[in-house]
Amino acid sequence: MNKRVILDNQQLDIMLIRLAHELHESHPNMDKCALVGMQPRGIALARRIKSILEERFNHKNIRYGELDSTFYRDDFRRSEKILLPSAMALDFPIEGMHVILIDDVLYTGRSVRSALNALADFGRPATTELLTLIDRRFSRELPIQPDYVGTNVDTRGNDKVIVDLEEEQKVWIPTVPIIFQRMF
Image 1: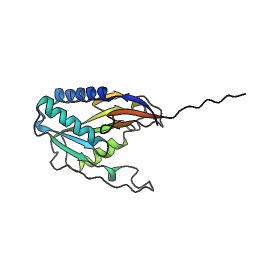
Image 2: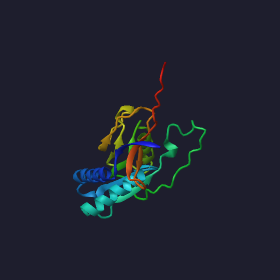
Image 3: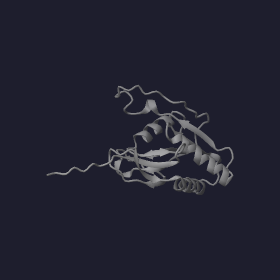
Image 4: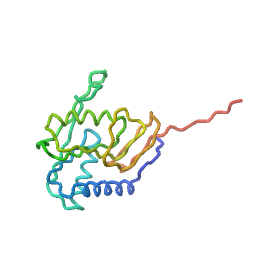
């Protein structure tokens, strides 16, 4: 499969460190903060950000959770495909906390909307912010904007942005080869 690489390994590491710096600048004392990774693809990103905050800024005991908003999606009952929830780990009260939702790609905003609905069942945070590695800003269907952005990527509507934080350590878009035909 051909790929258009958006971020290679080194660029990705620099971007994650920058995002962690931005969080630290906004929240130098993370005692009243909670990082919440959005299932499924925001989990690896949230874990990496948490690790950087602990190692570089000596933040200890960062509250960390994983939120599955499967049953809050607006397309939950519209699909023939059975949606199964992932394991959810949000075992602390979020009442009065500064919650930072973390997801890999912000596209239409529907996943974030469903995560906000799911989060409300756990309490009322003081604030809720959104951190995303990739913002596909021209595809929004809802008025949702990230507070922390790794980079903006302008794509066609049918493009898929792949964030691989585990194996290849890259962000890329699969490309389809264009075949030219002679027309005469």
